[in-house]
Length: 303
Image 1 (spheres, rainbow, N blue to C red):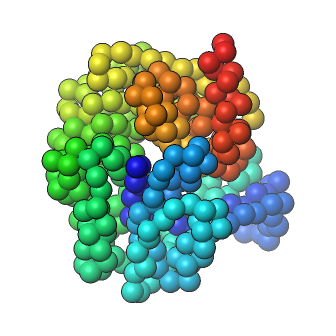
Image 2: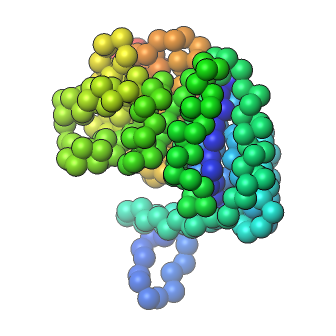
Image 3: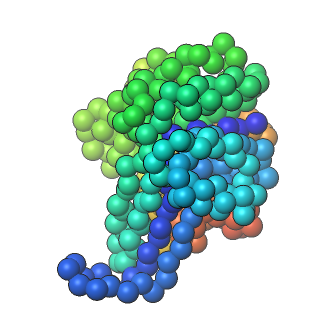
């Protein structure tokens, strides 16, 4: 089973405009409302790929109820904890010739709800995977991910971490199975800017020295790099196509990777499906379907 944890999910309100003029009335050409948050995106794509998953996290108020309803509508397995106060945040994705994001703050997570989460995590079984994705809201300790990893490391849970900065760096002491920064986030850990795959490989290996076991780095139009704990290094070029929206593409890559690894324990095959899933979501502008991902995957394995 692959569990995902999203401590601060959101309703993603995607607004498409032909042009945007600041200080004036702007009218949309298209809009949509989707359940969002990195872990929820991962669970959604895993479900599309037919992999057993459960989305864990916190919701609040009428926006949280809407988020839960959207997941139920798509049959995404979820066990989200309803908080006693506040509302789940709304994140605005403003899409014109470029993409602008405005992210909300989120609701306060009380101690009782936090204990409910740990009671659910206690039910994980040996060999399960837990995806720790996204930022930690200010209402929780910034050691949240480390606390979880420390508590369950003896259960032989496979941890995948998709975070950035100090939040990511602190998890290395607990030897996560996989981390998935993009090349900007990887560079930020060392105070450098990374542009070429060779640079990414060098710094991914440094991260392994700090404790991460496998490092999957997305590089947008330059593809992806995977540095494995067995010493193998793989690079995969990006697909050529029209990127409608990058939102959720990295989460889709992580989902594709974990879906393939869950079935085959093969790193190269996992990279192929990860890149296919990420690209399919970017080209569609929404979280990709199994058919969209399979179409790109076939092109990779046949090339």
